[in-house]
Length: 263
Image (cartoon, rainbow, N blue to C red; front, side, top):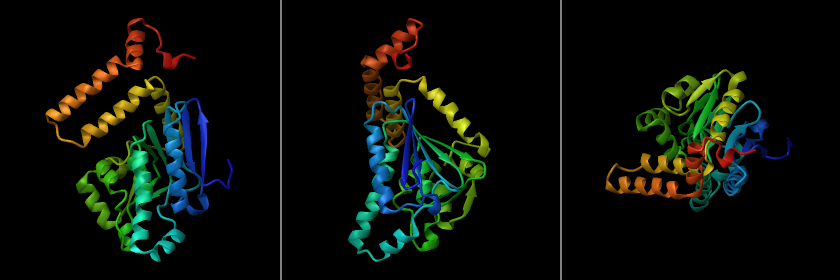
């Protein structure tokens, strides 16, 4: 790894591991890191060789939220400048949440403020037992606005209302209880558990995983009505007649591996 790079991307057999690399600042955000991470995620979304994205942090923390120097600069911004700055963070969260590749958050140490937002935007979140979480914005007289759509989606409104207003720190067991993460494991088993997820997903159709992810987002955020029912019917019909769906069904019937597993 190059210490001078704020973000390091490593590729291995279809898996892109994106590591925030500011350990001296606990991988805290500033406008430069936000722009760079957004650009990297967009590039990975367009890369057909990438099947899964793992998001991690180097050092003691996953991400401690906003960088203090960045916050000092924002304090002197006009309202219009602050709005533009906030939109950049919102675009990062939207890009990660809507990425057309499965995403896994590898959480260790502290995940505070915007770090919680990154966790909430990933499809799978696995934390070390000793990880800690905090929505700390109100301690500074602020609110977790840009990350709120994704945190509320993950935790539910009632849990978010509690942690938004108390700024309590909570552990990995509580994070799992409220739905922010899926699992927590001993720190020494964190990478192995993530590799188990990767092994599982390598057997799945890449296009089907992207479509399934989009399906979950669409169904989870809309009422069950005629529009949704027709939309789900259109989605499965499109997949069935598509090249990957045809290949997957043929491979199953012919008792062979599908093309995406060849080699």
